[in-house]
Image (cartoon, rainbow, N blue to C red; front, side):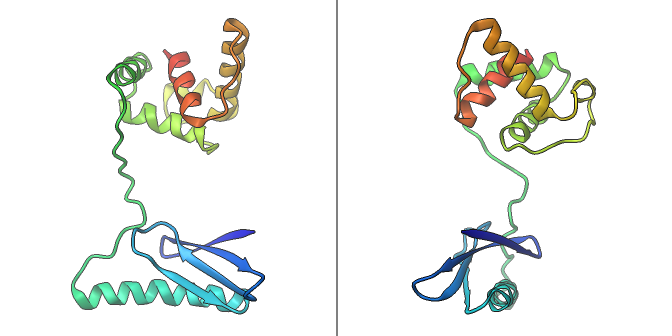
Length: 162
């Protein structure tokens, strides 16, 4: 069983090691390897906070910028045909490619979004509900089986939005 905790934007994942009788963890949203451990949950949480603070102090001492936990920028490589389909679908919805892909990714990870764009205001309760209804229509119309992998779901989503 794993549990996540947060401190200053850094996310620590706690894991119980029954054999060793400890709770160990790792900061999961940096490329730097930051680990911590404790005999109790309270000790593991305190060790996590200490690890993050030590990392920030270490960076400061060296005049280095600490890694930001996910900057919000994502570089993506996709085939030219899919790129064209995404661009066309986004334009039809009067959205930027970035907004269109962001919405598709929100659906893929099951994140509810607040209506903030004309296309989203027509969504029943959330983008996820809309996506689910849209996928059901697509399955019925084309007799396709829903795919389990998120990449295929995003492609189905982008094809339907066009």
